Length: 110
Image 1 (cartoon, rainbow, N blue to C red):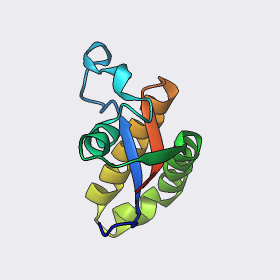
Image 2 (cartoon, helix red, strand yellow):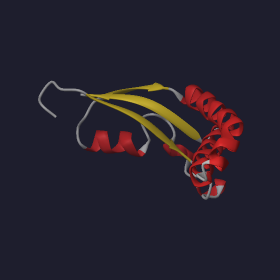
Image 3 (cartoon, rainbow, N blue to C red):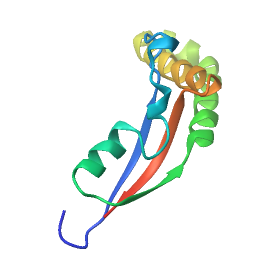
């Protein structure tokens, strides 16, 4: 980054569905403790973070609804693998959010 420059990151961090709840380190969820924040700090970048977790959750719920409505079209086009991939992602995000184990932040670094 050039001197005086800025970087923006839309970053999601949380428990993946295959990781047991007791093995996920919830201490990495605050905006200054995520893996991205740790990397920024280690490289001397100052940053701010805005929480978009509620928006991420709403989007996951909308994706599940849209996918349910479009499932027949996915099947007709024989692309159920795309449907299943997108549904799995939406299910994972919504479940992690409901458990309080998912965050989405907009980081602005300088």
